[in-house]
Length: 114
Image (cartoon, rainbow, N blue to C red; front, side, top):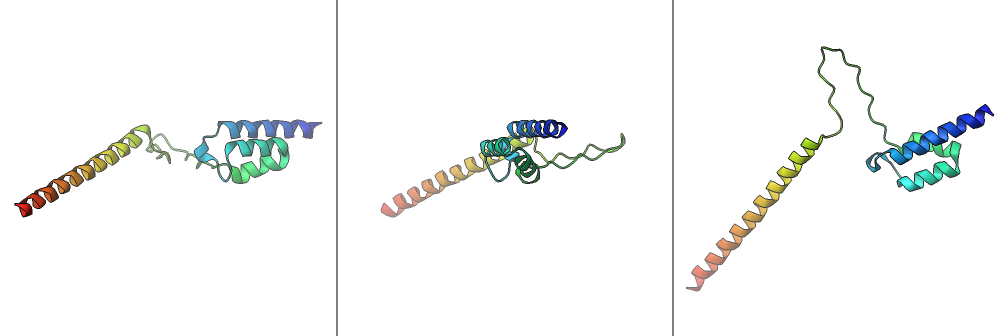
C-alpha cells in the first residue's frame, strides 16, 4: 500500500513538473509526449523524465551576506530588450547602407548616360 502511495505521489509530482516547466527547459520530446509517457508508464516514465527529459538549472550558490549576488544563467527582460534594440539598430543601418549604395549606383548610371 505504501509503495502505491509513493509511486502515485511521485507520478503526480512529475506530471506537474512536466506541465509547469517552460518548453525551453524540456529536452528530446515535446511536453505532451512526456506527459503521455509518464501517465502510461508511471515508474519508468518518471525516472526517464527526471534523468533525461528536463533541463536542470544550476544550483544556487550559498552566499554570505558580504558577497555579491550570484549571476543568473538567464537573461533579464532588460537584457533581452537591449539585445533586440541593438539588432534593430544593426538592421536599420544595413537598410540605410543599401539605400545609399543604390543612390550612388543610380547617380553613376546617370553620369555615364549624360
